[in-house]
Image: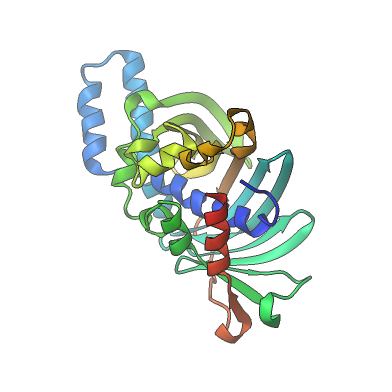
Length: 290
């Protein structure tokens, strides 16, 4: 895996994985009911754990009820001894997944929009290929190449598959904390990667489980979520000697915060004549990394 030239790629990963976490915290009435029935015969600690699981599973639905929010993303990406950091601030449509953000990466500012699962980026310091102002990358195609489903990048309503990957033993209450001045409850969550759509392929890169942390406010909405993951090169790269395995690891830490629920989100695609489509290049880079 390469860090070279992955400023845009890193942000793409952040955009894709951010929605994975949101969807992963969703739930349905059936799973909540089962948790309630089981708690009647469980011990006190089991009851607390199951109640936490129910709250975490329902977190996305609670958050989505607000329809929109301001969002901040902090990401750190490390590979081959190099590190890329980025900070983004903007707003997101929690029902559709569209967003507008300003992202600062490696000292450069980028205007970013996600509209209908297509990522648009504009750098004030340089033109896109062809002299255009914007580049675009079709996240659906990138996700398909990575073995992810549309649910994972732009269909927040489809949460059942993710809630089934979280069992009662996978949720642990850490305590209470203030996030941006708001009282929250902090949970550690473990997701069974094999139970996610495309889980077999994802397991090759992420391992059997995906650790997450979520902070829920008193209304059960997400105020902060964090993922710390290590991606491994696919098994097909086994032609390399064993002692080179560390060079095939990419470590990523992503923290997302939500505030000002109900804020207005004005996410529109730039005029077509101002956009260069870089999806093909992104897919080509993805094949090289794979």
